[in-house]
Length: 277
Image 1 (cartoon, helix red, strand yellow):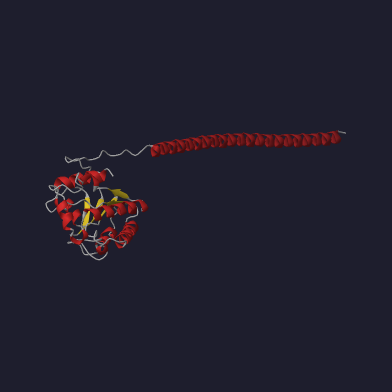
Image 2 (spheres, rainbow, N blue to C red; image 1 turned 45 degrees about the vertical axis):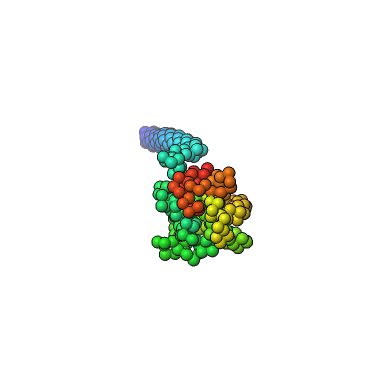
């Protein structure tokens, strides 16, 4: 009996030990689960906060970009301020003639002689006619005059002045060649405004001499066709004939010593007329 009881007690003790081991194992498992759950919660919180922060930062960046874009658009929409024109003591708008070029005959030379413009180039020659532009150079140049416009510099305006030496042609050749010059200027200076200047009036004495067809009637005919040529090409026709014609239909006797080329005062008036064309 005593031996049986002892064996039963040993069995019960081993059973209790197993139960305690199982309970301890369950405890450890539950504890690990709690720790894992807590860690997961912490990670979720961390990543959640990070996501929120990233979202806030992204929204701030997008808002900053939007504000910058709106500011840039608003700035671009503002009209570019027009600089105050530089009007000299003669009433010439020097700003209008900035970065421009005159191409033509001896009449252009007078602007150079009197130094009336501050920022302008001149490509001219005494006696130059429209058919010589592609072959004759200026007194100081090394290329045909028309090629001076193809040297890399871009001009805001090009003023063309021909006709005085060609009025005796009386035909279409002059205007056909003028058209070729306009086309060439456009190819060399695509962004420049083109001005076609009228042939200026002459004195009665010069008209009556009628040398090589240079008379007031031929000049009037040429100017009508020059105006039409300008309109056909989207160019500006600068009428520097009409304002200088006196009641008798001719240039005033005191306007030019040779009855053709203006003195300084008349050149000044001519430039003021051109800038108002």
